[in-house]
Image 1: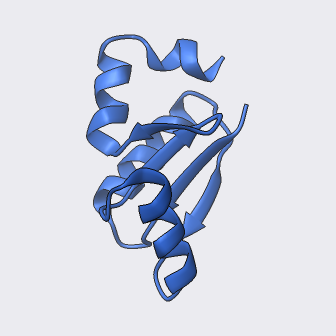
Image 2: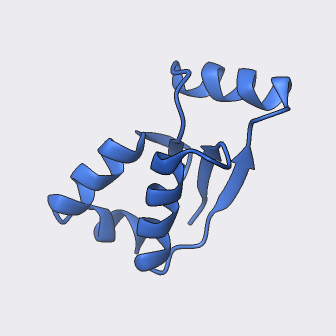
Length: 82
């Protein structure tokens, strides 16, 4: 399982998304994009979006925090993570 999440330290949506992943026992690679122009551009290129967080599971774009919360509400997140 490879989970990547592009974040900014003070972003409340990033904090919520990471907390939900941790709640599910998922390990993830956090990619902080503030002060890193290359990482910001990488995120935009991969996701087509400029907002954070941007979450990828096994290379597939999940989206942002709202998308992750929707998957969890539909009880589809656990299946993706396990």
